Length: 193
Image (cartoon, rainbow, N blue to C red; front, side, top):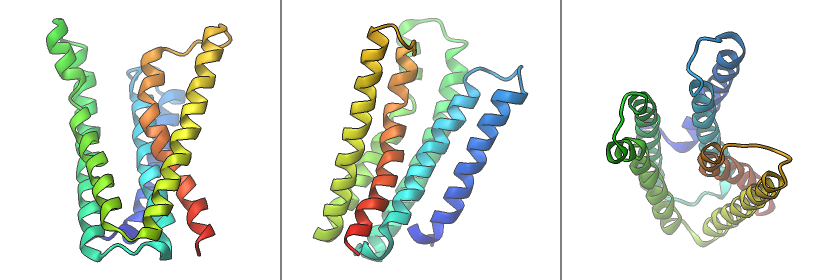
């Protein structure tokens, strides 16, 4: 059975490979669909956040082995489902006309993310108080940091300094929170060692 610590290195490697593929597609394959490189980059960011979170757990994680296994299993399955459904959704949206059906297809990737969030909440409930404090502090830092960046972007957009499509900006909120959370957890966990 894979544990979070044994999963960390392959996740970082997969994340780097996907980021490299996204850059290569963007720079070298002019005929590739315009959504492919950003999609790979979003998936790589989510995986990096999960890997960084696992790295931040280190010695501070007091979760029982069955809690860690359940969390890891749910996370891996949900993220794989998310990636697959996102690709299916993007491919189908190019062919579907009706607004109701387009909405349904566009929302296909949402349930796996809901399972990820449910797994995170369950994990936090099942760990000791010190680890809960580390997790919640890292989540607060991530939410505050990404919210500040999003609001700053909104002000710059309103002043017509930058021009970012709203759909792209909205899609980056959750992956950004995951990535910043993983990094914040590394920093916060060091204070308690």
